[in-house]
Image 1 (cartoon, rainbow, N blue to C red):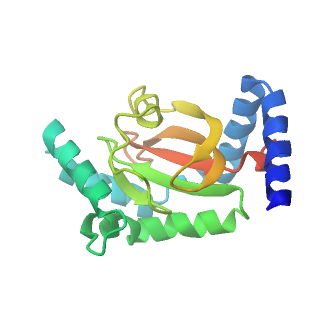
Image 2 (tube, rainbow, N blue to C red):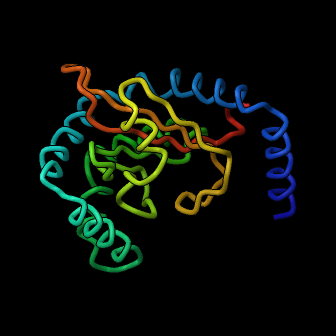
Length: 190
C-alpha cells in the first residue's frame, strides 16, 4: 500500500509539472494512435445507430427517467437497463480493446446522440452523459471535436485517470451520431 501511494504521488507530481497543452497533446496523440484505428468499427457504429433510432423519441423527461433507472439498478439484482448496455457485443468489443491496451486504457464508453450510454467497458455511475462536458463539448460542438478532462480520481473506474472525449461520426454517411469517452492512465502518456 505504501508503494502504491508513493507511486501515485510521483505520477501526479509528474503530471502536474507538465503544462495543460503538453498533457492535451500527449492525450490526443495517444487516442489517435491507440483508439481511432478501431473506434469506427461496425460493431460500435451499428450499435450507436440502433440506439439513436430508439432514443430519438425520448424527451427530457424520458432521458431523466432512464438515467434514474440506471442509478437505481446499480448494486441491485435486477438490472435490465445496465445489462442491455454492459452485456452487449459492442461492450464486449470495448472490453477487448481495454484489455489489449496493457493498462493504458482504464475505461471507455460510447454515447448516442442524446448522451445516453450505448456501450461501456464497465459500469458507469450514470446512464446519461448529456449534461456533462464530455458530451456537450464534443457532440454539442460537432464532428472532430475533442474534450480533455483533468487528471482526477474517477469513482466508476476507481483509478486516477485523464478522460478524453471526442465526437463520433458514421464513417459511411459522415453523420455525427454520438460521442466516446476514454479513461486513460496518465502514466501511459506522460
